[in-house]
Amino acid sequence: MTTTETTTTETTTTEIRDAYLLAAEQAVRLLAAEEVAHCWQKESVLPGMTVGGLAGHLARSVLQVEWFLDGQVAGAEPVSPVRYYARLVGTSAPGSALNVGVRARSEETASAGPAVVAEQARAAWLRLSGRLEREPADQRVAVLHRPGEEMLLDGYLRTRCVELAVHLDDLALSVGAPDPTPGAALAVAIDVLVAAARERHGDRAVLHALARRERDTAHALRVL
Image (cartoon, rainbow, N blue to C red; front, top):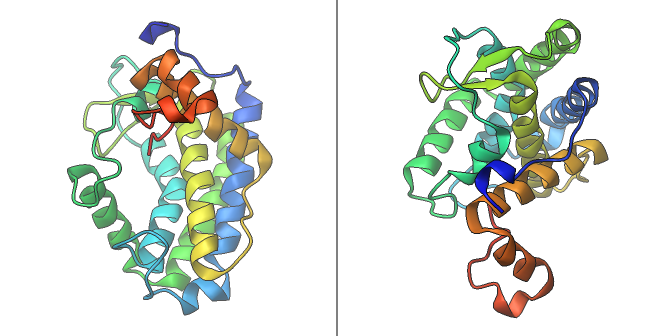
């Protein structure tokens, strides 16, 4: 399979936006939980990241949608959600430029404290709940941490479903709460990540990861 043939399952604009908003709502609720505030300075299940930093990272999957929508776009060729993840390097190395940048941005958000972070995420989610109904299907967003890069809004929301699904699980586990990720967001996340694995490693490697683990020398399903 070639790169251009690697695609995700078709979902409508309404379906992807609903899946995102449902997951974002659960993030807002978890961020406001007493357990999160109580554990803010403690180590999370992610080595080198506090619960507060992890909460800040989760909150950014709500906050950034609004920030990116308000960014300046110039008509660059949009990056697909599959390519967004397939090209990443250093995902499993704590000291990589990618992970250092993620932790820095997350801690910057978390520095406002648990109450402020929770309220910022809640307010952004409420605004997005109305705004996403009005944005056209061809709406683009500016990927602000990658200057000059753009994505289609619905493609970007697919990446946010990935981040919400992964980090809702991380944060819930860190504070001893049940994972609240909605099934629709989980389905989007798995779809995008498997497609990214196919683009990064090829179909044979992904087949081995799924059905012949003893031949999975590339750990092909590990995207993040």
